[in-house]
Length: 520
Image 1 (tube, rainbow, N blue to C red):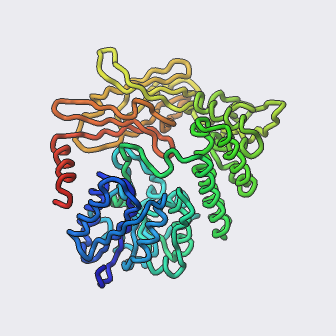
Image 2 (cartoon, rainbow, N blue to C red):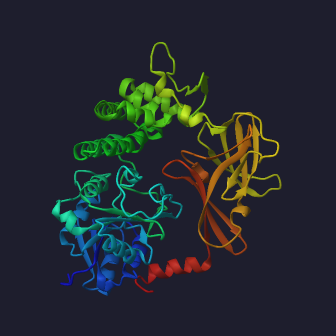
Image 3 (cartoon, rainbow, N blue to C red):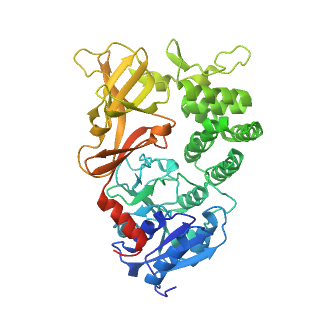
């Protein structure tokens, strides 16, 4: 390695990420900050694709800038990241996923912000690419110079894709827990957040592009739920041990129950073995007994609260029944009792089960002019004139007559209305693929919202889904241009349609970058 002192060290843990790795490396080594102010340390974690050779090609092209380490597969990014940290010389460290890439000015802007504010951590706005959707709550308020776990959405943004002051990491001995196969970046980031004097967020530039891989591969794919539960338990124990501020602890643990544990009790729970289901319910019960306060429970959405409460006080069969119900019926049927609205999940007001009504209370979610009651389904279809369409359908309740002088309830795709029909409580909308591909030839994501007016009150809500099946990726041709149309939910279930033009120039460029790596 060079004896110079770079401003920033970029760390990349690499495991079978070709061809995405090429763009990831190029995005670092073409940064506006200049290669003289950065170093890149890439650790090949036992890749079996062309990644190791690709790393060596870039190292040969940028001697003294790119360092490549090779090791046997460790099973997670934790070990490779720690090994790279031990060699890092930059004033700051940035962790980049090997299938993701940076905006050209990302590092210059991040380092400039950290130096200007004397900040120990800087978050730059992350956006999705290739159909991936990234939660934007942390960025919605705009640029902020001093955020915390209490005054921002930081508890829901604990990935390691941030700029960290390296002296802070060394002073506090902050490293990745190598016993975790999943979630290892969260304890690392949490320790850094608690040690940081100042944390800033910048939203006026697209710093980081998080890529959805075509093979949908990741470290947790196919992993037993009990293994993910083990790692989630370490997350929660770490948060409970380290966070002394009750409000901050409440928010981080709320995130863990809603996201990490909530994901274990849905569709994947139904697909695993009876033995695995028993282990998961036992583990969730133990964590709920330790950390699920009445305040946290009340703050959860009803479809999160019910399965967690059933795991704590009910049986495996109760949890499975709730999961099957939500997949089939969503937040339906609704029982209105006075001022309260309840979702009648299995076990609701069952005299033999005696579960509290509060578990099923969805008043805050449902007392609106209109609401969605079941996950949306997405299918291919044909319009009456034979044009290919996307068909979006769901059960939704509208509490009152449409306002005569207001907009009729309809689905908006971005800012365009779709043909929408409502029969009883069933909403069905058709989106011609030709309409989706009009306009410029840039990737864009169309947000799906249901809007209208009832009882003199306008309403709108994001259409949500759990999965989109065979319709998640469609290929459509218009003239000489092909378009990849993807209908997928984001991390919060909000459904969107992404349109990606596939031009001959784009295809040729990808082939050129693959055949001639490092050429600009």
